[in-house]
Image 1 (tube, rainbow, N blue to C red):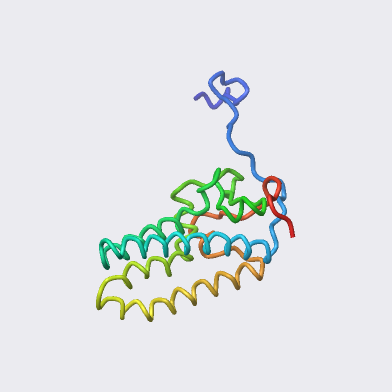
Image 2 (cartoon, rainbow, N blue to C red):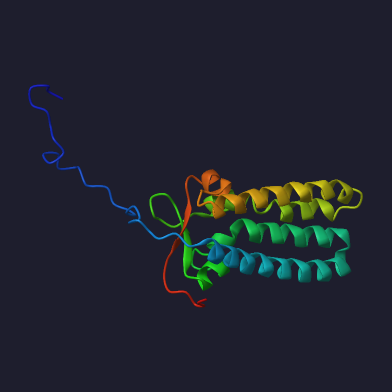
Length: 182
């Protein structure tokens, strides 16, 4: 490029402005009660699915079936934010969604990273199903409880969750009409 005649973007015929999601415009953040209710809806649903699978598979496969059911529960917990049109069941019911820092929908990988901190208890359930290793799982449940408590503390103080930081700055915003109101 000649320093005497610098080429500008307007003169370059191959330049096109970037396209894609636009950064969110000061989206209102859901309050603590709505976020907790949405999480309860999600995790009660996951617990029901895991329990039914655990009973059914344990009858047929023993501890291997219980371990498989715990693995399904862990997978559901990790991917919960993309299950229904890119939202968790609880968030969909309450008109919320998780978005990336640029305002776009999150990916499967971001959902896994975001929910890893909350899926520790489900993952420990895999270990708990294995004979003798179940004894090791007991103290790990306290770790899961402590991490979940810290996450709740962060949300209550309007700070990003650890999971949001792990996922590259995701956040929960209102999106669409709530199916239930309170």
